Image (cartoon, rainbow, N blue to C red; front, side, top):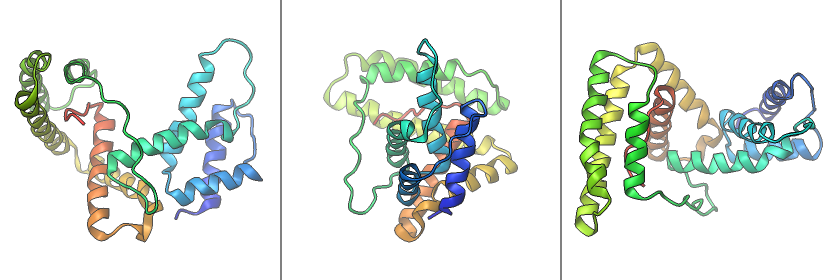
Amino acid sequence: MPDVSEYCRQLETYLCQKNGGHLIRIVGPAFDRVCGWAEQGVPLKVACRGIDRYCERQQAKSGRRRPVRIEFCEHDILALFDDWRRAVGIVQTGTAEPPAARKPALASHLERVVARLAGRRTARSAAFEREIERLIAALDPLAADARHARGEARAAIVERLAELDAQLMAAAIADLDRAATSNLEREAHEELAGFGARLSPDARAEAMRAAFERLVRESLSLPTVRYG
């Protein structure tokens, strides 16, 4: 488990920034709540994204806003933590797997994937950009077929998407330089630090792989091509 005092201090600092410099101490029941997040293994970055999500929603509302307290962000933080756990394949002992969000229709999923790939703003190496073009070319006919695919035909599309996703990740990882790879591996390690000995060596290795790949996607703005 991470150092709870440091975890709390960093969240307090981050929340202060989101509040325009207005410092609200995390003490009493709020501190106990944050300690619970640390004990569950909620990564600091996930907690910060939960704060971001709450603040963005409040900023969209008209009228004067009161300073945000950490307790207000709990729902968003825990929802993002469930998403993160699902992405890296972690189910905590004594808990059920968090319910998966309802999946979009297969055709809609494919359309969104193609749109995100085509709309990328930051170009990478020529080899990687050729891989993206090849991937889009492979996805376009699948998107058309997915609208009416049923049974074995639909299963074949889903299987093909898993293959294309693996190819995309292999190309993305190969395109990273050594420094970027090292930074993302360190970040993945930090994300999993809260689970310590709770994971077997095999489970931890798999979680590390999944956490690293998730961070690669995030850093390169890549969608998840596989379905489900």
